[in-house]
Amino acid sequence: MNQYILEMRDITKEFSGVKALDNVNLKVKRGEIHALVGENGAGKSTLMNILSGVYPYGTYTGDIVYDQEIARFANIRDSEHRGIVIIHQELALVPQLSIGENMFLGNEQKSAGGVAGVIDWDVTHTRAMELLNTVGLEESSLTLIRDISVGKQQLVEIAKALSKNVRLLILDEPTAALNDEDSNRLLGLLKRFREDGVTSILISHKLSEVEQVADKITVIRDGSTIETLDKGSGDISEQRIIKSMVGREITDRFPKRESNVGEVVFEIKNWSAFHPLYDRKVVDDVNLNVRRGEVVGISGLMGAGRSELAMSVFGRLYGRGITGEVYVNGENVKLSSVPAAIAKKIAYVTEDRKTSGLILTNPIRVNTTLADLDRVSSRGVIDADVERSLAEEYSDRLGVKRASNEQNVENLSGGNQQKVLLSKWMFTEPDILILDEPTRGIDVGAKYEIYLFINELVSLGKSVLMISSEMPELLGMCDRIYVMNEGKIVAELAQAEASQERIMTSIISSKSDEKAMAGKAATGGQLQ
Image 1 (tube, rainbow, N blue to C red):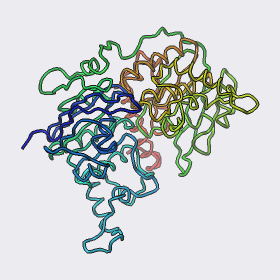
Image 2: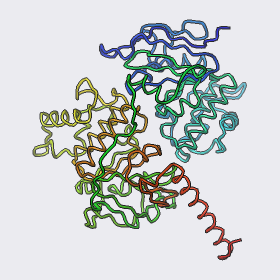
Image 3: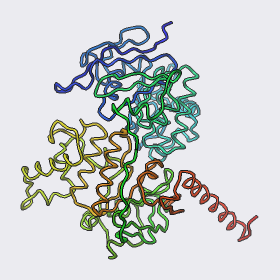
Image 4: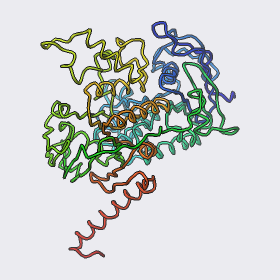
């Protein structure tokens, strides 16, 4: 038997005359974890969309050889029929349906000899529970998708892939939205699949994870194959991968900046908020402040309440029963709506650019000016020339790579979409910028450009509150770091004393303290 399950030979793909892929070659051995890395826009997802039939045969040139046969997939069902399953970065799950319903959506189960067109729910949920057990999920298959975490939803997607008798599993940024614990669980699952003979192709910008699990790493740059690195021979360190990805060495992942911190300009006092649907406090008596020219980080595990805090403060976007005070430049302000927050020179860059941040089917021009239409309007009518000029200015400032500002945002790479999102909020000319996972799902080169932009902002006297799940990012960029756990601030660390160990110790200690308090309450005040 041929050792390679997949060969993609001289794959070329064009969009409107622009080459997205130029004679790309990829060879994947059976039963290996093969990573595909490159900067945003390099062509990684396009290549995998060709392999999975999203872009059908005839829309590209070159050959796909799968199991020693030329494959000409007309659609995604063709590739799935051969055991190739792709899990996209944006999860394809229906929140209002149960886990079991989602797992067999489009692949509905009927009992042997059952009536055609009638779903056998006993078979569905029995099979679903077997697959959930395989991926290590304890939830019932009757649980609604909306009621489980993003990390668990990612495992549901993998269980769904297993239901299709997967032989080649493609994962596009599977850990982008996960915390370290959930990421490690997922990567452990890939290793287990490898032992069972399942081949995986992993697209990821988290190079530490790639280095940890990949047997081979193929680097794509500007739509062309650069090289394939083998874990069994040679250097596959992060620095080596980065050099191949960007064509140069990046010696300092976090740019240096002169600290010029001034007075407190933004302060939150005794802030609390409840979940919008359930009687559960998600933000619990939070106090924090940000000074002029300062980058302040918020660290914490998924579910700690970081985004809920940011959204509840920014015009009460999230939550109910909100109490507490916000001060801007010493003034107690009422941020009762998003326009009220914008009027006080506050901006919030959401963690979910594709759902909450941008209108993907609209041009860059429209998205850039969306948060402050008054600046481009006269008597309630948008002046297209003014809008075009200002959008061009902000796109140039952020370095958005585009054909023109008339290009729809959905056709940009993730890194450039993120830059458009930043442009949208910089257009409001904020003094206080809340960044929620500002570099999620983008490559090291684009991250560095955003870090430079953050440094530029604070050098101009702006203030930044940055939420991030990547501890090295917080440690490399922030003057101070607040640590959150279960809705509370459990530590405040200056840059000099902050470390990954200190952050995790603060979280673990707070959990232990809460258990001790709960135990004390249960025993009438006497600790046992």
